[in-house]
Image 1 (cartoon, helix red, strand yellow):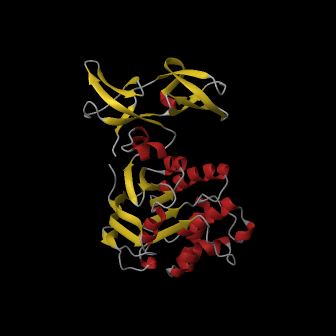
Image 2: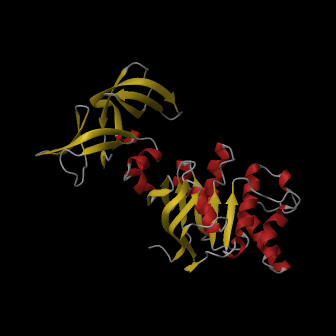
Image 3: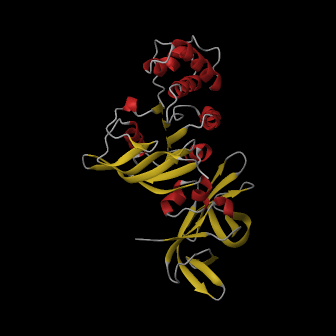
Length: 346
């Protein structure tokens, strides 16, 4: 069971002229929980962070930290830490000086500042770097310093806006595990913004998928991946085969007619004749066996597998093959499990 709620966002709305950036967003984050706001560029993720931090004022709604509304409070009085992709380190200060900056602002005694800086640099793996300047650090080290500085004042909530996006792929993979470890060890309540699905899965306790200023669906990563409620969530979270069809019911149960092919499906309470989509992840499909055929259009090698792009009765198909197949050829495939059915709405 989750601990007491630390951050509440209630019915937030924000416009910039004719553009609706945030449209009725609500969520709650418990103490020590990591919520990832995941979505494409321009969907309102960063604006929500700025509203929480006090860098923007909402047109309507509320932000509560520790059960208390912080609307009207300036950013420095909201007890919120910020971590961005550009580090924002002071170039003239040492590593220790950067980490201690917020502590000096809060008038923490010098002895306590020294102890806290030493503790945080050990936490982020930078013991011995106290006297170095930012220009002497790698990108990954700079981000570790920025994290230590954000954590130093002991904020109630930490807001992270794509902090790893400027790093190379290998370093991003390494640091996101480190970042999650640190946030969980310190029981930091966090809201993390990213457009990277893999990063969101790795870091989050829960994910809120955003689209056009709204939350499309929120829940645990596995729930969103295996049981998306909308076509957008299904296709945004990983690779997906999403085909239109018509639901049919009979004595043998439910199936979906996809361009004349009958696929048994889990259809819930949807009535016979419903316009639906069937959702099949590539890993749900067995290549080389089964009753269906598709024409191969493109093949990509990914080291541990071949990713095959094909055409199934005019519908695009992506599957993972254990061996090489040739473009222009035909593959057979079957279903490892019944596809999920999503209602198709106009």
